[in-house]
Image (cartoon, rainbow, N blue to C red; front, side):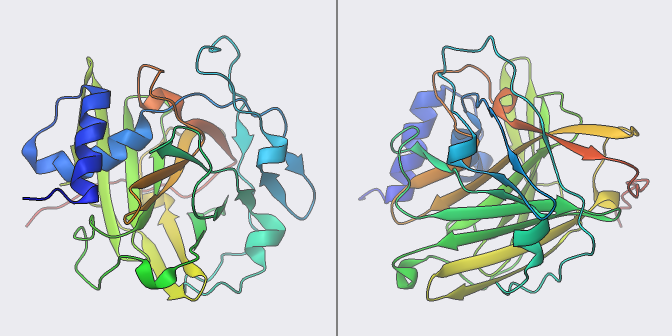
Length: 289
């Protein structure tokens, strides 16, 4: 049987990462572990103004995988004056005027730190209730995007974008929140203990999302209630974040920050970000019928 590009990509990533996975997680881990096997990024400065904060290629320098002596500075996530409407429409000026903008996405595969074939822009911000993320995934051939109307946790073969959120900054566990171009959700936990790793797709949480496909690609938005995740009760919350995208037809995995297969460890390579001030917290109890 001829291997599809996706299956071939998974096999390549498994060989590169030398990772133990179960058959149940072969597709999920194959793509996401590839993104997580990343190299450090040194952000030398972040352009900041009263209207917007931007993390771009011009304001960030990617450090060599061999240079791990310099700590990565944390970036403050901006507090938004009002919540954006999560409708999947690319028409809200709030993203450009108040949120942190991220543009310097690079390939993890097939060419490490290579220029992606398609442009990606992300925005992140928060208020007292939610963490917000928007991603504009440009595509010069939008008719070749892969997406389907399906149930939750059932769109791994699609194009998708994701947010990895390590809210304890322990480099051992991360929430993965994933959206296909229509905003259909997948969520899971990545766990790293004692040199082993696992993607737990049995974990579910509540968050809000929407997405739309147009003639320039697709645009998705998500709002993650702070009540839906766990984090330390501190005034200054230091979290680790990765934002990424896959392009199914080319086998590309694109990430921010930049990743390297030469750096050991996975969750250790995320970008540290700061949430300042009090936010709503929940008890995070889950009742199973």
